[in-house]
Image (cartoon, rainbow, N blue to C red; front, side, top):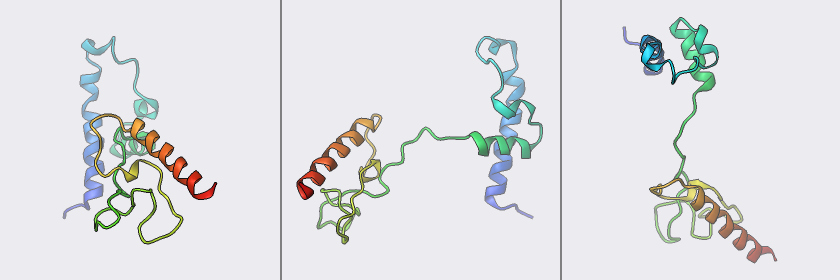
Length: 127
């Protein structure tokens, strides 16, 4: 009987971590790998490895475009160029989610620019 996809993925992840131990302990890597991370050193079962993964895994990706900005008359995007949620008043989104497509570099500068623009828009509305 097939396992649910999430369960199968967890098992695959854990087995991959366990299978890399002989490689990581090879003499070639002794000057590069100081020690196993956290509880992973003592993890011997798939369940223990998966628990380590769940507790310590992170992403290097930048979540962008989840509230994409577009022209006010466009059917795409949920934010207008003034960072206001389309169809709603007085709700602005000021983060990387308004960037419709990821830039080719780290988005930090773009997010700073969006925040500066939002500050100007808010001051113009309230001051």
